[in-house]
Amino acid sequence: MGFFKTLWNFIKNAKYLKGMTKKSVATLISIENPHSDYYVIKLQPEAGFSWNAGEHVMMRLPGHASIKRQYRMFSIASIEEEGVMLFGIRTGKEVSDFKKVLLNLNPGDSVAIQGAFGWFRIRDEHSPIVLFAGGVGITPVRALVKELAQNQNRPIDIVFSSQDYYLFGDEIQEIADNNPSMNLHKVASPEETQSCLSELAEKYGDQAYYYMSASPRVVESVSKLLRSKDITGNRLIDDTMRGY
Image (cartoon, rainbow, N blue to C red):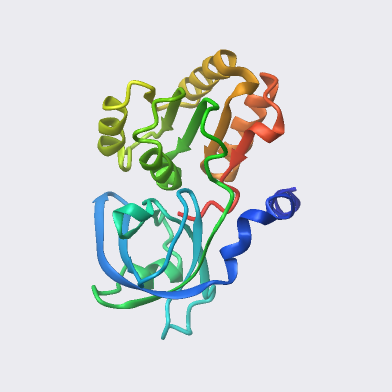
């Protein structure tokens, strides 16, 4: 079911995939390890490279032919105005061949980029927005929060669920504190998450857009919950590619 759902998302969101064939090269600036197996990677894009908040790129590491999966999809955590491409990733217990090489790169090393593209993007200028992120799924949500930082024309609720560490949490809290239309809800359990999302769904109904960025299992659970609250499918936007 997961494959066919992803395929359908690609078909119905074809207009958001125009940048998929665009190729460029970025340069590694830094790699930080803020907590446990969480990493923040900062790249300098080449001149003229552009992207929209919430989009992805396909990344390749030149000179490392031994990597089984030559390309990996990653969500961009920054907005273009910041001048750098920021990525939040988590390695898990078993680090993939790709991430092993990526995390051992040195500043100045080159990374091949294809994109940017993706449909995890703001749809209009007036609908209420609910942004749900589970763990490192906050990566593309950070970009949307940065884009919406000065937007006070509509309610913006961020539901950030994590059991151990809130990546970019302090920064997002500061943005929310400076925008009276924006609220950050930090939750730590499935029960808290469901309760918070249920309240927001009942509050905004089908007038809001609901963004979901987390593991496939969690996204499926959240989508099912929101649909049970009579939220229609065209109001649910999920980060199907989930690259972080």
